[in-house]
Length: 605
Image (cartoon, rainbow, N blue to C red; front, side, top):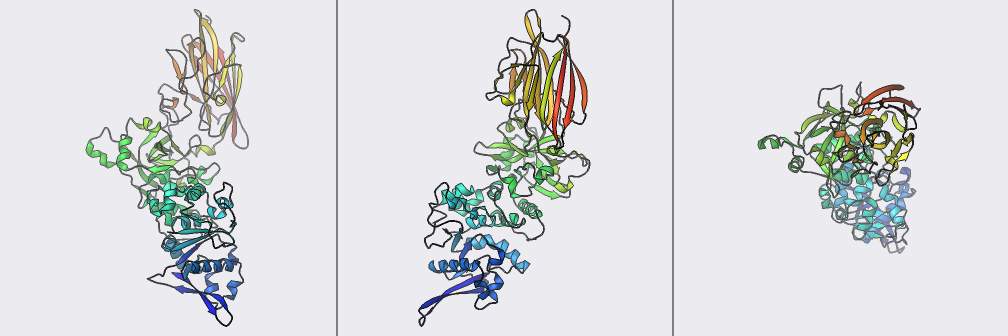
């Protein structure tokens, strides 16, 4: 380990002190030292290893803008009673790839073993109230860099210094723990005692780095090795493969399922080709509240193996292996619907979300180019990972965990269906009702998307247009058509219209008889009367009582591959024929407009 040996030479004749800085290599016993955390300036202006090792008077180093920062650090080191210091710009021989790799793997330990760390915030003035909501301290770029994350956590003692190197620091990490936690989202308990990092999930650690930036893409992974307790070779030029390798190393010793609890951002690479592992810390930006669940507790919570003898319960284990077919992992898995979309499944992860401890699932899709139990990760209604209080209810019927093979992005090729989010998606629904007895009864429409209190407010209209957002799901509206009276009882036909994973669907119900359409009950059902009900999909897409899990629910999915077609549905008691003309248009950006024209032929009564 190279250290700067710092001393002040006093000249009695000239009555001046000069600062002497010398690089020394220490092996074995390391003397006490201070360490610097800072943002690099322009690389050509930073003092390098070569500037100090081969130049006796450091003339080349002194001509660089970064020398003043180095000099001020050395003076502060002497002020704190230390004579050795370490700075990453000039204490690593970056011309040696072996030494660079060793330094990167050791850096978290080096910061942790330093007597004191000086965090230099060059963009913060010394006369600021650092606790002010709009302070320069809170906005400092030092908090946005990838490498400064481990430099913040690892040291035993850390002091913040302003851009002018005022001898009085802005504060230390302990006294400003609440402010630093607010800026970085790192829990106060970790800032006060780095040993508490062992109680933090992988996903939460990743989330701390999700908004930070690095100059080299590989450093997104390398700057996390110390925090995650991983050692691996550094290979500059491998690109995002570095972050994949980091996760593979984590999986060798950790059973923490939160490593899979990430989301693909819209428009990102991950949205188009997803494996089980993320390609960037940015995927974990919303993952701070995921915590792992122990295997025994996980099996008990989900009632795994409840139909098997007690000695079979030990079969479930949180182990996984990367194979040539992708990740092999044992998970409980369920189809999203018994009636449609049988390619889509949810797999339950051994982790929970937030203080409410919501169960967590991810979405999978069958990989048709491989045998059974081969899947790839996908999005569903805009979600990659989903947590909900209803997930436990959904799977509480019990199931044995299965061994799954989940493809990595490079295996997601061939004729299997592409990820749904890259397909065109429905953005507008035009619905129109007509009858063979026009004008007899007005049609009533309702838009759930515009309803704030989930109460039905019907509007008299034969036509309605629903504007939709990508990723929207569940019911978007309904049309209630009062058609005829039988023995003074009004009968209705109801068309429920919805969106599922970018596809429009509709279902015709009726005829029903009732007085006035009442509001829905508990947001999940449109109650027609005391004897009949239409359950509408809940706004929580995995609500167990919603339509996707009702065996008697068979909606019609609008075929977006066919420009137009007609369907004919016959309703009983009394017999009514409903003809549906479907038409769609697709623009260049993949947005679809669907037109539904429903023609109702009433019986002669």
